[in-house]
Length: 233
Image (spheres, rainbow, N blue to C red):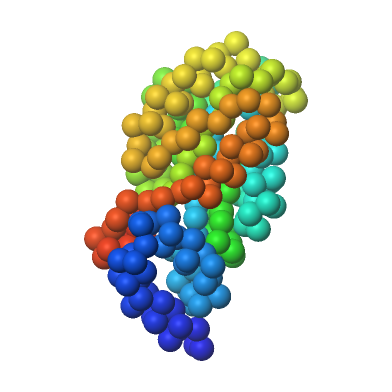
């Protein structure tokens, strides 16, 4: 495994890098610039993971693809969007449906991390499924709570519901859009992952998102490395 010595050498240099730079942001930039020195087995733990959340029709799917394209990363589409017939008047959500969505999307994220180059951009995450559970079921299934507790993201971009709602045949919550958006933001901000609010027109959202990702920092982990990296190594 020819990359292992390079990976180990880089990690041994981590305290030195942190000591000579103003903090985690510079460390992260240096790590991303030296990506090829990391062994492929180690790379998933160093991928910058960003989740886009928001109410219906705020541009999550399109922006996920745009950010991944601009950053040279991988996009993870929303699993739950087409998993069940949400707009069908006869459809009745069940706890196992929401648990399947939470588990399947988390699995998609972890698989994508294995092939990502530096950045992973996810369309929604488990807190969104949790809030959908509150709205659909009036309660949150245990499997959804587990997904929230075990998912790993470095940044959450919350897309404001300040653009028109568009009926695409799948969306079904126009009347409760504002209430859902408010609850989702409230719940997301209770989690330790930093949340950045993104609003404005489509172009403004894209540029603000890029700026937030590039400015990303992370708390120190127990090994002196940023955030979840310290827990993972």
